[in-house]
Length: 126
Length: 391
Ligand SMILES: Cc1ncc(COP(=O)(O)O)c(C=O)c1O
Ligand code: FES
Image (tube, rainbow over all chains, first blue to last red; front, side, top):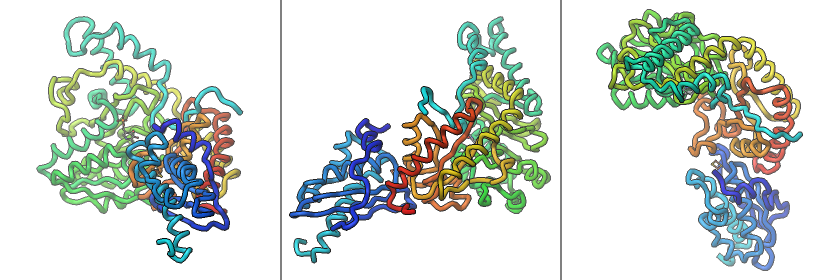
């Protein structure tokens, strides 16, 4: 059902965990729906310096969160904001159609984390 | 521990075909191709084999051979029982009763009938997943024509008080159907002891072939055919019979008759061993279904694991070559977790984190110990990853 790349990220998730003194936190999903994701980021020079995830959910939920952290790391915040659910799915070599609901969480979670960081900065950069 | 083969623990989904069943079927797939409805010799062979199969199954259920009708499996038997009874008795009434924990073959058929102006009452179950016979009786109305309650549930294994229900409703004039797909071959199933008019069974849950089953229709029970065409099955179920399949089901029943009670005891002991092992190793876990093992199918156990989701557990177990099922919505692609677990009052987030293990003849103590050994670290790994579990 899943591509080899999805299974690889499920088996060996990258950047799993929490950044304790995070600059931004994004939390999306809802356990009653079976999926929830928390992304924490560290920002340096307007770039995503470090990023970690925690995920409750299926194989697709874990794999999308894992790969979104890989995609975001080192990018400028604007570039990271441009990561879409579609590009995440493409990067994984595709996802089953019935998994689109939860796999949409990863990019949302990252964007929430960046927005959280920006709002803490006093909204100076919008 | 390294294992070469897969450890299959999902016998409620389907069972491996017994070698002896496959051997019994083979001649009927190859040289014995005669159509049982024809008059010449090879047709006669097939016809006779079907009647022997019918007698074997009837005998096992305490029924008469003329009361056994072959179908394409549990789903068809359920559809036929419900639609056939509803249609045949629609002049007398349009009210049907069922429970909230039925298999989709019954749930969806009931919904279909509802759209065709039948009224359906769905009686709830308790936290163990068992219906109260008194609640069924209270749901009866003047115009109730059919009551359908499954014998044993396919997700948590809870056994329903069919005989008690039958006792309470027998004077109402309503027909009584039970889906015995999960119970046949595992616990005693006798149509007179249960007091039912209609009973569904399926081949592939009892080490027999897929796509074949039977419906027991008690004598003098009126139900409309589902399939129209040739005059097979005494004009009640058209279509050239699945001869190899029917031979296979009968062989499977014959084997079940020999081994059922001893096997039930063996599987109960394996389940008890597994549950004890899991509870020693894993915190924040609870049983779904009756605590009392005598109220549960022998090889079945369903439990919820706090803080993690079912499909992820299944994938991790598959990486360790163990095959099981889950109540999580994520495994089916729908958003709602198991309707059975929800009907038992289990919160959605815990239903998503539920696992069903169904052991069978091929499982051993070694398998059970292996399962406990690989599952404990799987739970730990997924809980470490989870944002909602920080104990
Ligand atoms: C309780 C119950 N009823 C009906 C069915 C359907 O049987 P079949 O797969 O033979 O159509 C199943 C099996 O999935 C079942 O567990
Ligand atoms: S978390 Fe439910 S489908 Fe992915």
